Image 1 (cartoon, one colour):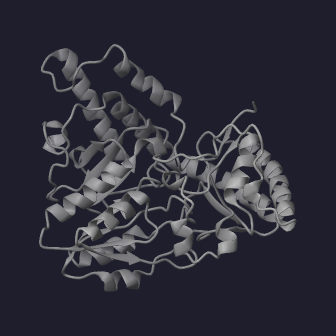
Image 2 (image 1 turned 90 degrees about the horizontal axis):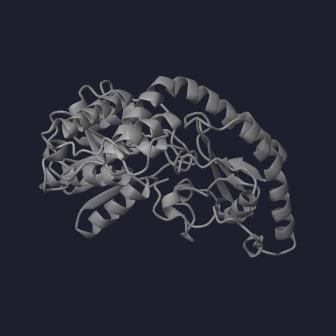
Length: 408
């Protein structure tokens, strides 16, 4: 079995060794309940407080009490949106975009069925918002605007500072899904007038099963899990101590390395794209070229099928994806690319490469050597009239198969 080359970091990242070591004691000898009065438990409680401060520092929060630990980004998104409509029962309008993560889209569609009105902002061919459309969408009935910082499929960055200025000028609450941005770009809640912000540890080399929801001080926010005093009575239940400690350690490392990692990974991404665009005919990059995450490359190969490319990459030990891990298994084309108006002959042949801290130049070169031959092979089959999906290589190890439920 060849050594893995993992270029699917927008789906999840490898846990950093330092993070694992920080978590280990809280899975073994330091197992006390942080709510206990005795010293054995209270020392665990102090470690949670330390982790809260580390996460607050990563996003530039003014006070650690603004951080609520959650189980994941999806929970944070749901809690933020539900919390804002619960505290404003007289308002029945939500504004979001057509390219949000399924955690936001699915909930807003559910709320539409419950009688709420949702405005779905469009994007242009580069995946960018029209800020005038946002401005005109806001009404006195708008309870919340929920817009992501960085798109998980294309890496396109939205101008959160300009969005916040428009939204706050109307006195409306703003929620930002920053799951893909945290740890990859600087965040500063002191400078940005964002009311709520969602992040998830496993996107910046922390463990799965833990995330955080930032709620600015002064914002009325109801409990979203009831039955205990944890998280200042807003999310009841015994804390995932090891996960929280791991998230804190990952946040501290990410904050220290964000500039260095962004520059290095951006160079690797550019090396990947420049080579593939030269060597693969009928290849294009989807999304705004400049304003995007430094690690993300969304490529389309005309008239091919992305899943066929992934299966053959998988046989070479290369892990990538066709887009969001939460929509893997769906036969529907990417909702993000459809919103951008990408034509059908391009949209089916999409592969997302998302790089991370542990990727190397050597790995990029292996992909650049491997993928052109795969594309050439599939283009030959397509020219013969055989659909790429009919080409099912034997002995696939299955990493290109369905991965429903992972937040990517």
